[in-house]
Length: 451
Image (cartoon, rainbow, N blue to C red; front, side, top):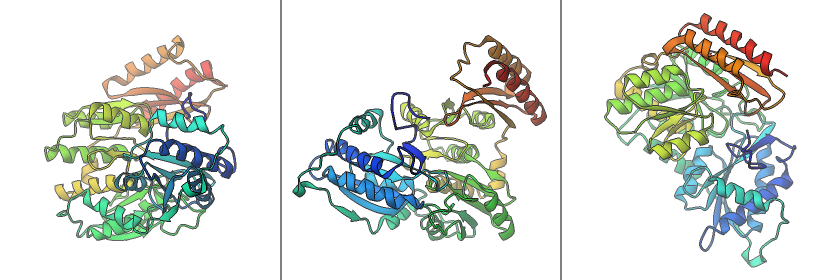
């Protein structure tokens, strides 16, 4: 969902269908120029921007458009080719660039594309910079003098740099010798990175989803479709499986029994291992969609937990304000600020693997220490923006459901950020009861708000 004060930037950059505004070559040309102008004003001397992309076919077109725009503004660009989104954050910071740009629509199919920005510190852009960029988009492009035009070059060792960084996050003494791992790269930007990371740390790796053709990114593979990984883990009798999304900032795992381990469970496994080793990390930040089981399991470890609205931007903001090191979403967007500056699927999976090695327990045992509570979700189509807090009928129904659920249950009513629906979620100990209450509550909500 877009920020209401911005025309183009949403909670995670700019995204949409290829060929439909704003995901067009002419817009990308203007966006590259606007970003170049903004970041040139922030730097000293020769300025540079790192540009990476995932494997979707439209990335070539938008890379060329951005290159023209940025160089017209007098800023050098360093191209990485296909690289995970968190790798661009890392390279932007370590190569002392003014900014990083990623051409990606993350977990979406190839028909979509988008742009994500990173600051020189490897973090998402603050609002003021996004406003500054948008403020130039309605102006005509003005090219700097010929002698001041930006230059373009390729970073030939980008993959190697990032592989070494990922390995460094688990220390030089830790080895995954003996672990058989299936790695699903979703035919996305981790295809030439992730298998090498785990192999170089000693694991036996079978890689799937590593044949990108520009059209198959996220297709029946990766973290949004882990069924392929489940089947392969069981067929190969592997110790576990790891699945990334198309741009590598999300991860889900699969234990040797074929159980899917989502972002909430990965967060718990990492937090538990840090607590066991007396590593200080403050607490854990989740979202409104984080399973209540995570909150209860962390409470048992005496680990503080808070929720934010859905979106990694909000999670990161809360983490920074509290100076906490762990946070994330159940979708698999896990942030370990003691290791890197943004959500990183490879780094997060390495932290979970380190816990497995440190505890000498299989993933199935570690995930079982957190009991996820059943959830039931019903989507109600709505015509307009609704004011949930002001509707006494709905609020009364919510209170009634919450009283029936007791301590180990909760209700969440949330407008979708991408479509005109209101999501009714009920969570509790008994699946049948949860499902029944969710549908009863959704009938009340529909009677008040349905289109």
